[in-house]
Structures are given as structure tokens and as C-alpha cells.
Image 1 (cartoon, helix red, strand yellow):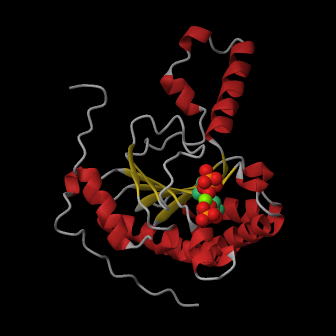
Image 2: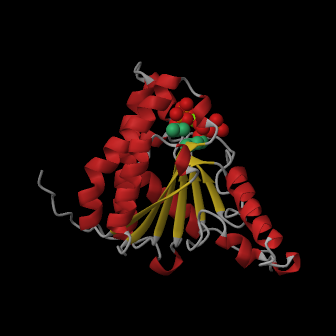
Image 3: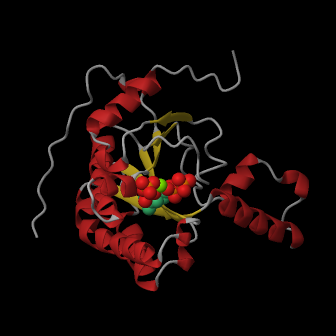
Length: 249
Ligand code: IPE
Ligand code: IPE
Ligand code: MG
């Protein structure tokens, strides 16, 4: 397979480079509904969703956004029919294997957040391979939330910190935001500035609960498989019109 060199797409002129979000997070929702509207099985929506994510990643990189985090599978998604869960696990693995070379070439750093130990062994291996191969890349930090739950992330941080206290390595009054963040899966990644959720649902669905404290929320009715560059451009335009006060005046 030959890898096509990609042409860098310029940032649209109406967007201000200095006011772009540093970190964009996406809840990629609506794959099933997209497929259903076409009379297709839900998995067709997931398949198409991968292409959309790939283009968004490239778009973020082209436009100078430093970090993209995508919600791929929640701790609650195990409750779906087993055929769908199995399809998704196989899809993640296949896509990682297929895209690794291009991610390396395009200087993308990939990492994963979530309880990865509960994923199928072969997927864990593919994840480890891709993280390793891209760890020094610098064009964009791409984080995939897989078997991720915000509450579960907070709990595992609490357990780790409690263990340190029990061992006498830390005093309870020393626990501050910085120490807490060091125990989250997302340690080292800045908080999202902009959260985009597709398909019109106005909820977080257990995504990055701690990190989202001051994110700007943007919900679009567009279903994830239809979320193209024009739709992303619209989200960024809305973001640039926001007044981020962070509790000040
Ligand atoms: C999001 O699309 C993808 C995953 C949760 C893996 P959905 O599968 O939730 O699609 P809808 O919301 O049922 O349309
Ligand atoms: C959130 O979507 C999880 C992912 C996009 C991976 P869901 O479709 O699972 O969320 P709910 O059920 O609508 O809250
Ligand atoms: Mg959904």
C-alpha cells in the first residue's frame, strides 16, 4: 500500500488563528440513527464514522489545533447487543492496524484513555503498538477514549491517591488539583476548550467529567457520519463568538 502525500488545507480566512481552541473534544454520536435513516444496519454508521473522524483529525492538524480527543466507546456501551460490541472492537483494531503508517507519516501522536485492560487482548496489543510508534510525534495529540467513563476515571484516581496516603507517601491536606490530575488518564493533556456533540443530545454521557469544567459546549443536530469540515468550521465560528469568563467579569 502506498501512502498518498496529503496537501495541507489552509485555515478558513474568517477564523482567527489566535483564538482557535487548543484542544477539541468530540462525542461522536448518531451513527446508528444515520444508518437507520438509510435502511442500513447500525454498523454501517460506525464504519462511516471512522472516515469522518479521520478527516476531522487531518483538518485539526491542518488548521493548527494542538489536540483532539474522541469518545469512541463508553463504559456503558458494553450494554449494547453483543454483535454491535464485537463489531466495534474488531473495527477499532482493524482501523488502528490500517492507519498506523499514515499516522506515523503525518506526525500524529495517538494515545488512549479508559480502562484498557478490559478490552480484547488483540486490541490492547494494537493500541500498545500504535502508542509506542507515535509517542514522539508532534503535529497533533490525538486521544481516543475507549472503554472510558468519567466517573470510573475519577474513582481510580481516588483509589491510587488513597493508597499513597495509606502508605504515608502523601498527607490528605496535600491533595490538590495538580496532584489529582496527575492520576487521571488524561494527565499531561490540557483540558478541552471546546466540546462538540453531534446528533442533538444535550448531555455529557460520562465523558471527561473533571476535565470539562470550563469547556465551551457545542451541540449540533448533524449526525456524526455527516459531520464534515463545513460543520466543524461552523462549530469553530460559534466557539470564537463565545466570551470565556472563567468565573471572572
Ligand atoms: C455513537 O453513535 C457511536 C458509539 C457510541 C460507539 P451511536 O451508536 O450511539 O448512534 P445512535 O446514537 O444510536 O444513533
Ligand atoms: C456516548 O454516546 C458515547 C460515545 C459516543 C462513545 P451514547 O450514544 O452511548 O450516549 P447516550 O446513551 O445517548 O447517552
Ligand atoms: Mg448514541
